[in-house]
Length: 316
Length: 290
Image (cartoon, rainbow over all chains, first blue to last red; front, side, top):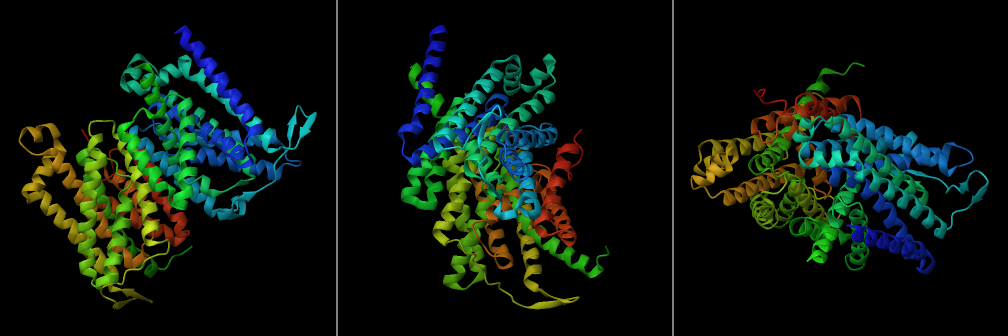
């Protein structure tokens, strides 16, 4: 146990160091690519709290992600001068509010009914955002300029791709450490108990519904954080990101990487984006045909995902 | 705001016509769910594929009825292959994994459709072109024919399930898989057959829908969502409930479209779904479980 913990932190440090150095050595395209992997990885990680730890497949993560994005956009467009931290605050508040709302309804239901309800909520918010043109910009979305990175109100820098990458990396790393701590806390243990056997968790005396609501809120909060990061990186918010296909992709990241591991979904996001990149060179917009086939095959033959598969191989 | 009576009547007829098409899709979905706990995310895409196969057949032969038959048979065979290769290995695992697998299939089918048939909408030529006067509208006979055809197919399915030998096999497997197998019913084959029937019905609704809205690769998602709503509102795995729920949801949307834009009318059915799930999660149109 002790040795594997040491190995874990050594591995973690190596990967972190590689990610810190990455933007300095990679060409422009791949630098951006790695930053995107981190953002999508954070979104996937947030969804893992539900899929992997509580056993609820959410098809509503695009809502939390999208609300984070739109609320950050609202802050950047309305508050003068644009402030990064206020955008972050707005985004988190928006995502948390909508997550509470969705959680209130969706957590009363189990299994596929939970999935369908979250899916329906993502459609509701998509329709609202798509049709409410005066506020959300409708189909065109909202465009804004990137806020400067201000620290303690004293220093203020313009983001370069490299500093943006480091900023994203810092946020994602802190989120990872927080989420890891949460999953190992008594709260996280209760969530896993719910996943393993809900009636038993209830019989022991845990208020299952309350735990589930908090899990969805927590998950939504970090999904919103990913949305804010994505908005800051790309300087726009678009309704496409609220559409439930994004939620579907998040589920794909999780399954590909391995649910219930937190690191797995990030690896899954990287794997998916690499596959997309590779296949779109040959298949252009039809990359989802091979990627979809690989995903379906992985559901059938590799239910533990890449990470689970690798772990089992290493243990042999 | 007063809405003229004739508009309400027109929307009632529209609602019933759309409801019958939806019922055809949803009854396949609910049959599949009832028998093997598979939530088929790709069901709407089978509708879409059926529409495209039908459109291609009409383009080559010019015969609507042949197209209906060809689409249903081709997609049924395709469905059987799909079930045997991707869903059969998942039997006995968590039902949630079937959502994932069929979601993957759905993505593949959508992209395949763009690749094969292109992004533009295919319109299927209706077999009868006459209109009749409905207040100030020229209402096409074809719309009514659609409702009748859909009802006929559902009726045939009902009779088959009620009286046919294989229909009884299907019902037996739905009720108790293990016991049915003990009685000598080949349950895996029944599963494949049910998936094929559901797929065939989806394809038929795709062809019937073709003249009304045109076939694009996007209609699949829409049908999947609406069929999900209907199946949950009607009670998972309950055939009669799904048909009533299709009518209910379609009428609700049709009336809502009088007041708000059609895009927003969809929200009404979403809200109906959420209310159903909260207050009567077993479905609106089933007897209260004891």
